[in-house]
Length: 165
Image (tube, rainbow, N blue to C red; front, side, top):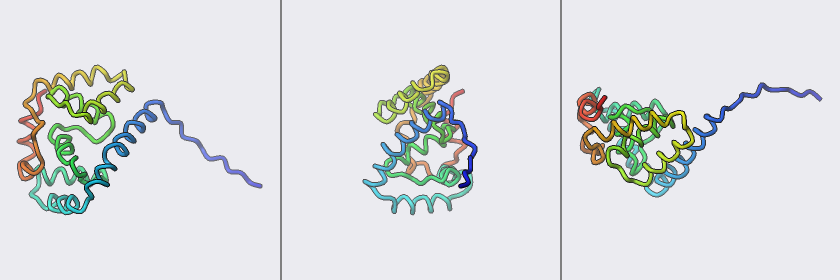
């Protein structure tokens, strides 16, 4: 009998923590929302966004979602909008940083607090999370911003309004 020994990829503790947080996001938030609300309306909306003029919120958000192989999620589209406007990526670390910003900006949603609490797993980044919190405190409120209201606005203009360095 021949046995093949395949090289094993070492997984760091940080990668395990990030996969854990990502699993919570997918199975604790995204999947339940998809199941509850369905996706047909949001598939049509994403198609519409792809056809909006270049450099608009809708078109740019569609590009980001497509690039990350993501869909618009019911009750989550405004969350994705905040990723775009504030310039946070779709990684676990960027998610936690954005939640720190949103907490500073006045959000008290359970999802915000839960994701921010997952930052406990990454003590080397606590200083960065605090800096994002401070940015949120000193920025105009983004909490009421909705995709429906600003889909046709220029992304650059929206970023200038909400990103404080």
